[in-house]
Every structure is written in C-alpha cells, then in structure tokens.
Length: 140
Length: 140
DNA sequence: ACACAATCTGCAACCATTGTTAGAAATAAA
DNA sequence: TTTATTTCTAACAATGGTTGCAGATTGTGT
Image (cartoon, rainbow over all chains, first blue to last red; front, side):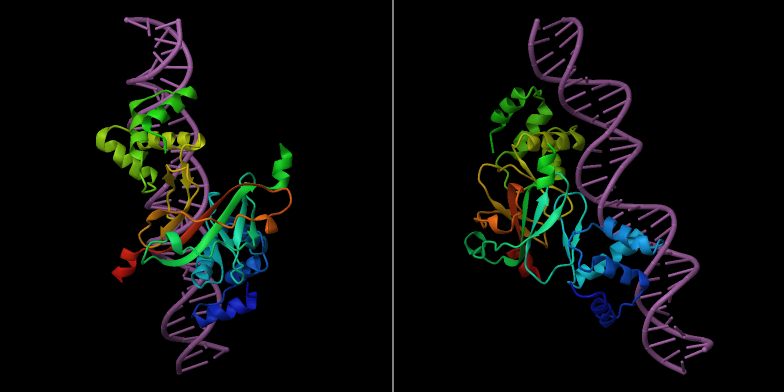
C-alpha cells in the first residue's frame, strides 16, 4: 500500500480534502495485513480520535476502493474486509472458524479460456481457500 | 442435484418431515442453473403455493445447505445465491453489471501447498471470475 | 383417528451498510 | 489574514438481507 503521505497526495489530486479523519484511516490501513472490517478500522481510528464516526470510516474506505488504493473483499463472514495490498496479485485463505483472512500467493489457472463464454469481458478473478487455521483446529 | 424424490428421502433420513412447502422448494431448485437467491426461489414457490413464506424458504435452503445438498454462494451481489449443483466441482463467473452467475468448469491451482501455512486444514476453494457478460457489454 | 413433536407463518429484531442534512472545517481567492 | 466556496463530518434515520420468536397448524407413528 502507498504511505499515508502518498494517499494524501492522491486525495488532493482528486480534489478531495485532507482531513484528520481521513489521515487516521490511512494510518490504520498502512502495512496492515489483517484484512480489517470497517468496524475494526473504526476501532483503531477511534483509539486516537474518539469522535470519528463509523460512517466516515465507511466513506473513506469506499473512496479508497474507488480509487483502486485498497480492495474490498467479501469472504462470507458477514461483513466486508478491506485489503490495502493491491500491488501484488494474490488470493485469500479464510478460517471458517475464527474468520481470520490471510494472503495467499498462488497462481490461479490463467487459461480460463475454455469455459468462459464468447464475449464475456473478464475483469478479475478471486480465489478463496477455506478451512481451519492451526489454532482453531487445535482447539477441538 | 438430487431429484426432489431423493431429497425427500434424505430429509426423512434426518428425521425431518416432508411438507408441501419443502417439496415446492425442492422442485424450484431441481435442475435450476440460475443460482437463484432466496427471494427468487420464493417467487417460484409462491407461483404454485401462494401462502409459503419467505421465512420457510430460507429455512429449507439452510437445511439443504447444512446437509450438503446445495451450496450457498456469496458473490458480492447483495444477497446469497444457492447452487443445487454440488456433484461436479466447479467455480463461478459473475457479471458485475447484471448480477448473472454462471458455472465455470475450470481446474484451479491444485498445488496450493506452497503458501498454505503449516497446520491449516483446507476444506475447499472457490474461484469467482468477475467481468461483464456479452449482453451487458453490448449495452454501452 | 390421536397425540405429540416438528413445522409454518407473520412479524419483529438484527446487522452491515448507505442516505440525509445541518453545521464544521479545509482550501482557494482576495 | 480574511473571506468565500466547496467539501466533510457526525448523528440519526432508513434500507436490504437474514434470522429469532410465538402461537397456530400439520406430518407422522401408534
């Protein structure tokens, strides 16, 4: 992910204003490998700026996603996850027990050709590998 | 997918009762390649049994999913989709414009080994390929 | 046919997310 | 720096999908 400072530039370039709330979200995401939900980003932000609303966090995450600076994941755990790592193409590993999401660096069948219908414009492909992580598997 | 008659057997085997509502859901799913939402299953069912509630449809779909007779898909289109085809291993193609979901018969990187952490029990892997279907691409 | 347990319906509650709006704050212009 | 303009924020309400609940209803084994 870009640094908070770089994101600030990108926002300015789009004519968006730089507010402390937005910077706090940038900081919360920077080098964060946990694929946080909006809620957990909000918690992190609130720890330092108690008045920031969840609405603002959603707004900023949406802006970032629209600019392609982060990506939104739907892994079936109820709420969306946000992934600051958009530079490396990668996929995800999900623990069905604790909800943990982890990056997975795997090449996925690049020759889709066969079964994709004529005229379908492929934009992207996401692989989700599900299972139980070690600590959950050990628990019972 | 199993025939409605077979599902009836499976339900009985689990000690679940056979009600006309449940049979109507079985029928609505049988050989249905559209990956319907609960809402659309409900519409189909209501066409023949006007009093069936959406709640009952959800209940039956959940039962079927728990028994492994159908699978629940979350492709990020707002509502869950249900796929009666659990016999053939396959993946999905999603049109981001109209929400269409289609089966995709592609082999996906079977040697995950590399990046899966030690001790993680892999249960399954789902690939979602996103893009625009021909008719949506033609529209604009 | 009976009795009991399981099921159905209708409605309320829930959760994640988005719409709205008045007031506050950041930038641009002077 | 002061003002003017435009954008943001916070709070709250509303939405959409899904599940919880209570009482009436209906399969099923006897």
